[in-house]
Amino acid sequence: MEKLSQLTISEIVARDYRSALVFRTFGIDFCCKGDQTIGEACLGKSINSRDLLEKLLEALTSPAEDSFDFKSWPLGLLTNYIETKHHALIQERVPMIRKFLKRVEKIHGAQDPRLKKVRRIFEKSSEDLQSHLEREELIIFPYIRKIAGAEDRKTLILSDSYERIREIITQLMTEHEQEGEYLEQIRILTNNYSPPEYASNTYKVALAMLEEFDMNMQKHMHLERNILFPGALELSQSNTDSKSSR
Image (cartoon, rainbow, N blue to C red; front, side, top):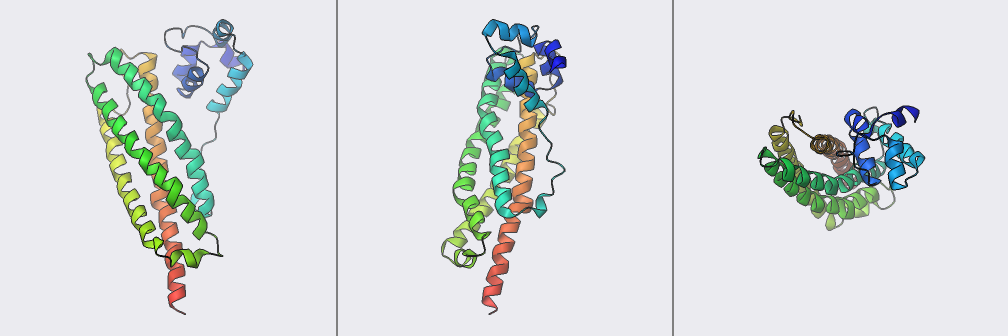
C-alpha cells in the first residue's frame, strides 16, 4: 500500500491499466489530473484512501487462470466459471470501452481516422455478443448443468429439445468465428494495440482495455469451443449410445 501511495496516479496507470478502472469507479481523473498522488486525489473528493488502495491491490493482484486444468473440471462447474469470470468481465468492460472509444475518437479522430473504424467494429461485436451471452446463460448453460446430473440425463438427451440444443451450440461456435474476425480487424487497425507517440493516458487505457477484452474473449471462446461444448456433446452421445445398445 505504501508504494502505491507514493506514486502519482498517472504513474500507477502507466504501470498497470487495470488501475484506471478502479480510479474511474471512484470518480478520479487519471488523465488530466494524473499528477496527483492517491492521497491528494482522495482528499479533494472526500474519499477514504484506504478503501481505494484496497480496491487497487485487489485489481492488481488478481490470480492468473493459466495454471488451471479446466479439462478435469466438472461441466457444471465450468459453466459457472465461464459465466462468473468471462461473461461478467464482458458485461462490465463493454460499457467502459464504448465510453473510452467515443472519447478518444472525439479527441484524436481527426488525426487518426482508424479510431472511427475501431469503434464501429467494437460496437457491432458487443451488440452480437449480447444475444450470444443470453442464449448461453438462459438456454445452453442450464441444459449442460442438467445433463451433468446423472438422475435426469437420459430423459433430457432423448427429449425433443435435444436437437435444438445441438443446433444452438453449432450456431454459437459459428458466432465465435465471427467474433474472432472482429478482434482480428481491431488488432490490425491498432497495430496490436500499440499507442502512437502522441497518445494520451485515455488513449493508452482504451487500447489496453481492448487488449484485455481480446485476451478474455480468446480464453472464453477456447473454454467453450474446445472443452465445454465438446464435453457436453460427448457426454450426451455416450449416454445416447448406451441407451440404444440395451
